[in-house]
Length: 531
Image 1 (cartoon, rainbow, N blue to C red):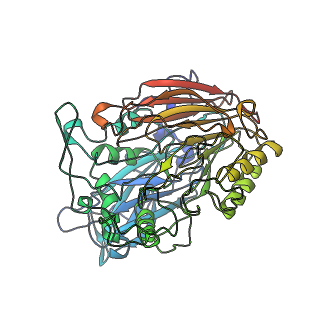
Image 2 (image 1 turned 45 degrees about the vertical axis):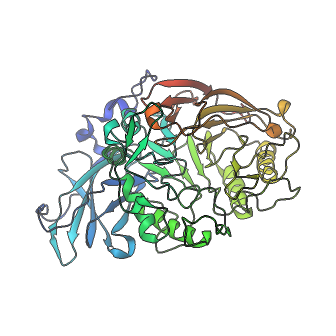
């Protein structure tokens, strides 16, 4: 794994590999008893790999899926040899959660590499365990010296472009893994529940795109089993499984975890014959259940549908990540011209939560992880009406519709003098950087800020969205195709990087292509209300 080439100081990334055995800070308790006899036939298997989520300075969540009923056991160690381990007894995995489960690790040392392995034990005979599956992650630092680096993107297996073995599958994950980030923020559309995957598709140059296919991906997802199958589909990709075992994730969701452009209370038109279930609320409940089963989220569990996706992840003194949910609490998509809109795209309760947590944050940088952009016009023509899917509705004047709620938030940030806010998003299937400036805007009661867009990971690429001047965005950089739904074979697959230097506190954003090459770089200074 590569170190951070831009940082001349040998932080923890430069010394961890090969030296962890000497780390006294991770001298974890030794497991009692002999190591289990690892298995072969007739014992539980974890063919979908492992992943970790929402790792903090002293905790993290480990996820696995079994092929049969099993007890989940996690062992952690300072070294890959697992000479000294600490054991965590996890849940019993069964059909109720599609044989998935999550174990919370706590009391971990800050700023250290943790090696772990997941064992699946026969519920009737704990001595019978399957072959262990291993992974690793870094806990967040307690101090600021080592800095923080993470990646973000979104939109996986969209528009019918699935796992193509001819191209090596989801290759972008290998490029991201080479950067050895502290975590990966997926900004939504982890699946395309409304996007069937066929065996082949014709490309403009006359060649053929080939997909790995499964029964659950042969139609739009309606049943819980079909939603679950969408998540399992992506885990057939070896690049993604390797990445999951190396890099913790911070997951949020958007529309395609359920259906394109959905909103609460929506009823699917009778003309859309793909769906026999017409209630989007029913589909959303099933999609949410599967989402909670296939990702480790501390605020959302399969057995508690009152949980939530929005949350704040604290990554030491340099960074707090505010993960938004711009899907669950929104009002109906409309032309967006109303002059009052208390519900907006966040809902009143989430907006108050965000204000409160931003004002409480003492981190140098406050990253607002939005699953939709602020000033880019995203239309919704699902039902043949000129509705708006995101925030901006194309009217460059004073805030209307969902813009009213964003204006309230931006005003709050200014008047409370909250420093270091940066917006990250995906959704629009191209990459760009927008700077928002009051002097260019119709609404002026806010401080300047940046919004960076990345994605897709493996989906169709689309032309750049139009800008709405209500908040005065200037597109400083963009890379997007001129045609719609360009396949991953045609390029235009992107991810972004955020690198916070522990010495200066500077935050550097890099927009990268599928192979990791840098397209655009912007350095922001700490301690400022606006940039």
